[in-house]
Image 1 (tube, rainbow, N blue to C red):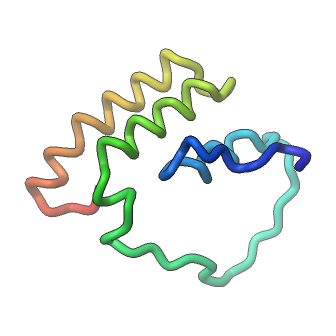
Image 2: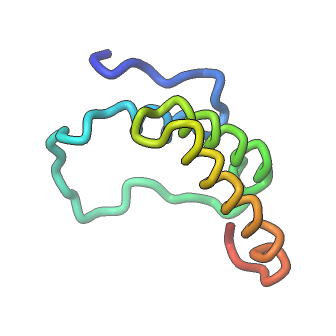
Image 3: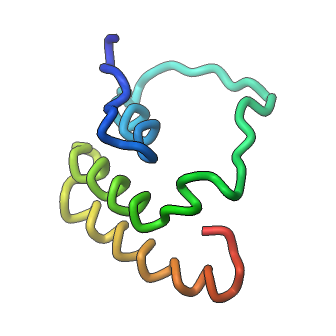
Length: 91
């Protein structure tokens, strides 16, 4: 509860929102093991535009990014999406 809970408004970018709220100096431990298996058919792959919108909103709220940098990241990802799709590259 120290850093808040997952924001239920974000169906795709809730984890990004939570991770960006953690302090930069938070101590972590590296564990050399797979903890998540991501399916290529998951919601973030099927709903790319929703994912990009949510990511932009999360980045805009983050003091490390702010609105201007969030929009630049969003535009960059938005422009790469059709190219990745055309070349059948995971996006």
